[in-house]
Image (cartoon, rainbow, N blue to C red; front, side, top):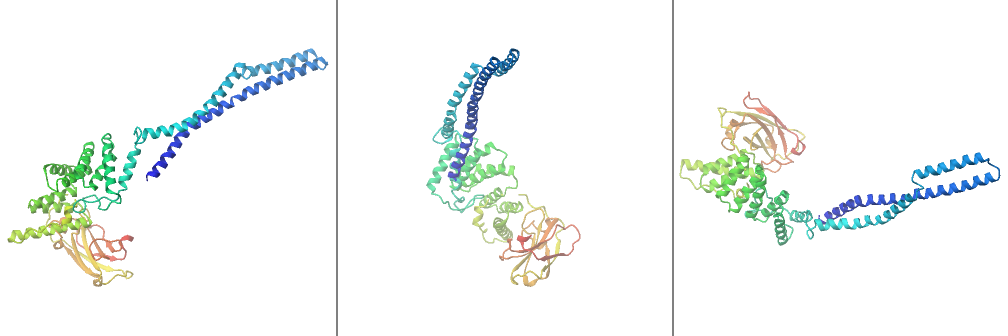
Length: 463
């Protein structure tokens, strides 16, 4: 990376030198060319004298009359005067041309001097050991820090938005580079890219207090940036040992004011409520995080927490019951939403789905088949699900409100839904490129129900 940079810098120096050297070189050639008019003038004089001698000889031999001689002599003199008027015969012009040529010869040394001086000045001006006017050192530091590998997580295995992974570099060297970058940025408050790189480096090093300071600097420059506000809130949350201190609460509230659908902040709110033994509030914030669009493993973890909280709250209302279950540990490291609209009188909504398997599809008879309905505009989690195996196909199934995976997230809560069926190649609900899948268009649940027919024929990766 660094060698490529220096190679590119060298090419730029050569290009810059060319812009200076070439014009001087051309000027030198022009000056050298100014000797040609003087030589031409001398030739004209020699020709004039030779022709004058010939005319005089012809007059003496009687080959020309005096009148003819006078006429031809006058023409020769006029030609010579024409050359003199153009400056080719004047003695001062000859001297000037000679001087210009001498100056051109002396000036020919200047391009060579500049060719050496310009790159040296650039190195002195922009390098770290010189005047440090430019970004050579910054580029080297950035390349070194980015080459440090994937980001390492926090004490519990990673923080939100910071991928976990080991560093292939010696940590002492990386720490030194980060310290050097921090020192340089003290005199570069407007170097936003450098400050963001510094904050990310601090997060990798688990120096959360320093990361919070860097994010706070950037947030001060861009007060309306919800992403920076979220990064800062998460950094102070980790710096304060995952406790909702006053500054953490203020940072979270500010982030949610800028972006009400910040899933990370909702999760932190939910965990804080759980730690305060406010299970109802924790359940509400986890539900909001799901409704905001949490996906993949993150959504699965949140859903586990929701299911446990719903079960435990139900037990608490009817009997003493066991203590509240613990939230999955991984939720402590993931970090962001409006609740679904309240159920209407459509609690009896249902969908009839006929699922067929195309004869050309070769699938394991024991493979699991998921039939599901999900909101067209809303969270990706299913509103209703039925399971079967490939051996059961073709089959007609019913999806209804009783199959909601959580309260407030069923067919009664959304008017526009999509129905799908998928053969899981992995045996779990998460979609895979090799799964066979068929999806319907938008279905209006407020209209009269009709049979929905879906045929499995194409894989997800081919759709």
